[in-house]
Length: 75
Image (tube, rainbow, N blue to C red; front, side, top):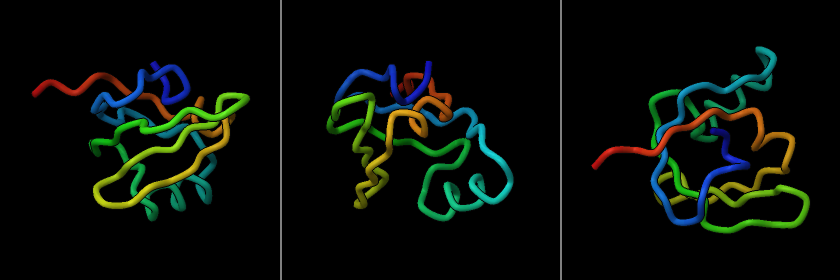
C-alpha cells in the first residue's frame, strides 16, 4: 500500500521511499524515512495528502504520495 491509498487517521509504518538519491535524502530530512510512523490527516484533490510526522505536518502531491510504501502499524 502507498500513502496515496492509505486510510485517514491510521498510523502507518513507512516501508520504502522510492525516489532518486537527492529526493530520497530530502524525504528523510523532512521525516519520511523507512521505519518511521506517519498518519494521513487530510486528503486533497488529485491524490494529494497531508501527513503528520510527530508534531509536524507535510503536504505531498499525489505522485509523491504514490512513491512512499507503507503498512498499517501494529499497536
